[in-house]
Picture 1 (spheres, each protein chain N blue to C red):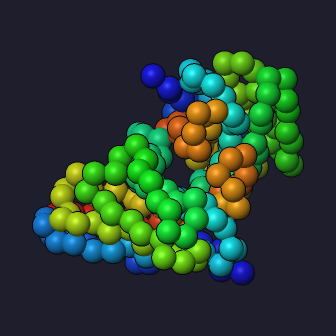
Picture 2: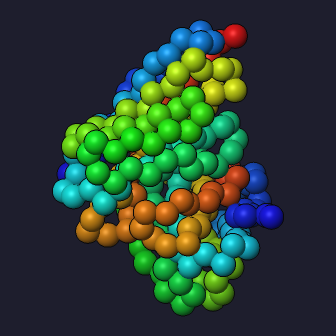
Length: 113
Length: 110
């Protein structure tokens, strides 16, 4: 059972480059979300989705885009990478948005130089 | 402003030495409080959900409790494999979003 799969695990970008972080889950979960984790800070929500075709912004959405064309996939796009986007990114999924266990991927460590 | 604070930032214990981790919160309305464990290089892994003051949940050497202002994660007779960062998060009544604390890094020495 794969759970939540994120690719790549590591990435180095130059300032101004764009890229897509991939996230896929095989649990038929409706709710998916993207977080970033920075040293000394709690996880911060970037974008989330409550089902295919429905996305919304979280706490720190600037510089990121998402789409949800299928239940399984929830890619995160960095439009024009900046050093401030250096972070570890986690994708999570859950059966419902409230009160249920969230399953996290292994993370993508992104460095923007 | 909704806020979640975890203390201490780091805690070193000898194997078998029991202790508690704290998660205090100031939020407009609590829907639920979550505890997760995170190992280095991995994503968080769910431990508990608590919904109301007075509620307690247990799993092996861990017990989570909730009051109106804070939650405690008690660890009894810990083992080296309990070493990890423990994260708490609060879900607000007003929306689906979670507000996360920065975590407590727990190190258990054999």
